[in-house]
Length: 309
Ligand SMILES: NC(=O)c1ccc[n+]([C@@H]2O[C@H](COP(=O)([O-])OP(=O)(O)OC[C@H]3O[C@@H](n4cnc5c(N)ncnc54)[C@H](O)[C@@H]3O)[C@@H](O)[C@H]2O)c1
Image (cartoon, rainbow, N blue to C red; front, side, top):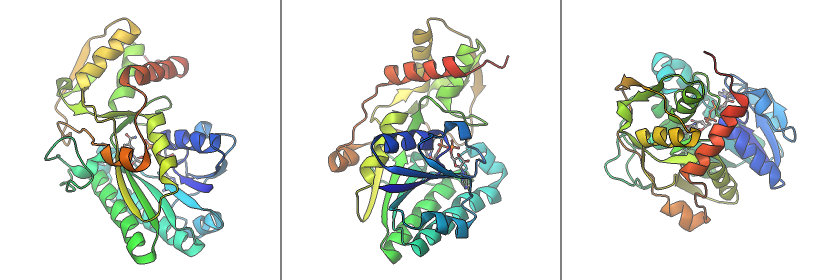
């Protein structure tokens, strides 16, 4: 298939591109490099440095393609609290422009990167796709719910094939967000540079950490789907954040003091996916366990990360 990947120069996009290309798909990346890295792009993909804002150019790029995997988004929760207008403009308006460009170009299949954050504070664990969407404590979460809603609307109004993937906590090699607010890359970078390990809530929160290659595989399985589908993508295993730190200590063979960061507003206590639906309907399953995933993540930062202090 000929697939346009928005946000393809980002962390998750670069892994999805590689898998698509390895499986013989043609990949066209659309990314404005507001956050992503040109170095992360696979040489086999073609690249357009274009923003979602530019509907006309999107239309021209999209013509003749089969599907869009839509990952372009601002993602940093804290930043979204400071810049709600920019987040709404970039994520929501950008998504509407993309959908309009797709409609005009006759491309009617989209796989959309959503997040477990849409559930808010879950009423039960594990979370299933029919659980209600929850109250949001930051603009980022609202943009994700709204982007989902627009994708669904284009299914209802214009018969788009829409698959919404709700990621739990992705991690793995190549995670180079700036600023980085995600736990695993921050733990690994601190431990490798022998700096105190920043830990919120004393690490008591429970998360479902999904290795990047397993997450990427879900996008490929979604491509043949028709109609409207929503899937959680998680391992169905809740792990205490403090236990992740312990595992990294074990893997590197030494310990570093903890930097107790106290509480952080907006963090929910526990998020664990039920992935029954995606297993049953798409034959997807998480293959990489936390030990193996952390080993690969540590190896990536050992080879590429220069401690700053
Ligand atoms: N990383 C996570 O933990 C996580 C969890 C749940 C959902 N998601 C979703 O997955 C997607 C990818 O996340 P990521 O971690 O790879 O983020 P990322 O920041 O690494 O990648 C996002 C990419 O989108 C690009 N982009 C942003 N706005 C754009 C615009 N207007 N036009 C063109 N390109 C634009 C950025 O330059 C960047 O390369 C996002 O939609 C995010 O909301 C991520």
